[in-house]
Length: 180
Image (tube, rainbow, N blue to C red; front, side, top):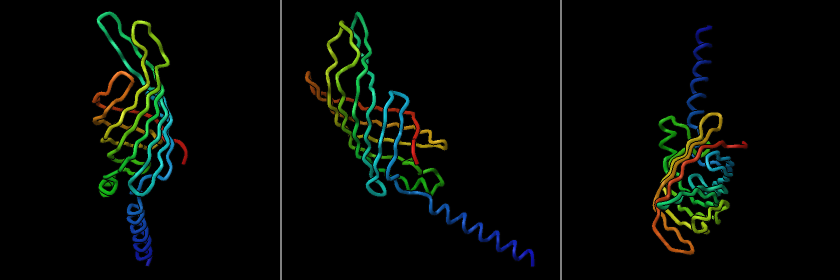
């Protein structure tokens, strides 16, 4: 008799564990706040539906210029907006991989406004503000402890007061998801 109760209890626990895995989130978070450490900044990502988000970031950017005599680093504030489509959340969930807090791969339309440099060097022309549009492929992973890693890359077009040019867009961030 005790064996039957034990079997029944274990069966219920097993079924609940299987159902809990099925209930793992395969949709993006409705609201997600993040603090980036590399090139410090703040991020808010708003989920519109199960796969699409609007990513908004205010951060500091870093630039480098060089000529035959000198080199210069520039620090400039940026605003980054992305419309993201997360395309592999179900596949990650099926493989038992983490999908919480928007851990997945995405395609994005990207728009970045970079303000003029807040650092100066008389050997170089003043770094002017610019606007960049691009298409990105990226991945975002949020691990236990809310540690966040993100990478994205793709082609872009940069517009500033001097010229318009095709540019590579590459971004790598480390940070923490904050809040619930």
